[in-house]
Length: 388
Image (cartoon, rainbow, N blue to C red; front, side, top):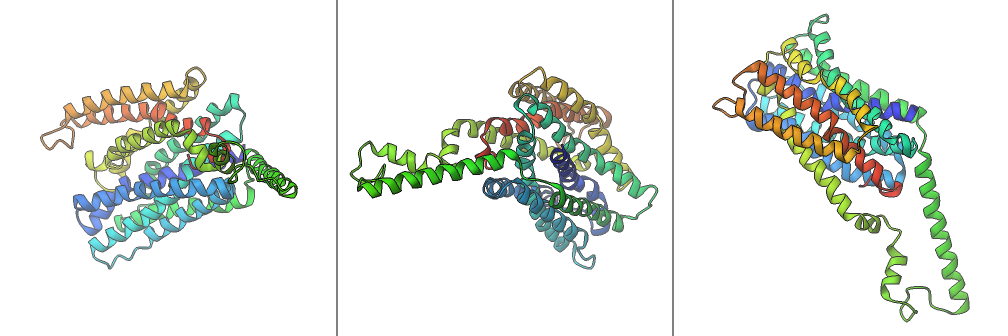
């Protein structure tokens, strides 16, 4: 339970860090001037590009080194990157500030990308098969909490603390760094390696020792080792013996599943983050309280949606939930497009547009958001779960 709680809190901090740009954008523009479309895209998309690198690199690393070590490293990288964002000098030109923030958020994204597969792997490996869906929903609830934490923190920063715009965006990034460093220390001190990973490592070592013993015995008899040139049996048998237990072979054996899960996640990220990270641009709001209220209205309905996801996960397959959510979100996107003004970017009617946007967040939480996170953790074996 402790491991799942730390995974949940990690995703909470991750969602705060990746979505905080929605809240700091108005404050940054007040201090450094209007963001160009390219600068706006850089600040919002840099962590997503980093997340792709992090998922591929750190997920594979976790299958070799273990969940705990990489979990500690990801929190540390996120903390350093967030702190670097908070400490960007004000005396620099606006274009230079935005470029540096983009670079820092790219490295932040690498850490967040590593957290995604590790959180799912940790949830599955710390629960039994019967309760894995509910464990995954519990961990995923951290994302919802993180999306809520951002606007609530900003309301506190702007209201009772009365921070001005120059201090507001720095304090926001610094708060994210503090959470990440606290998680890094907690994981290092309290988290244990999962039993499933340790068992998989032991099985791999035992298989290697057994293969070595067989080869040594064959050499002592003067017989060729299995799969060697001139040995009995087809070449395919030798290849299977040499590579059948490798991670690459396991991934290839599940290539169609990998295409489905990775493809769904890729399309999901394009669909959700292409609009989700620009909510304060789509619904133009003043810095501080106003922008926080807009984001809070969008994210608040995801709390009961998480409860509904937990209930539905006990009655429906994750795949079915995911497909249903994708279909209903497609209808919401189509309806949202009909509300757009002549620019094709902002809704003509603010309140209906905002309500429809919030409805998409609910469907996302109950369907694709849960399914794309949970299914890979459930279907792949321990030794390739982080990579896949």
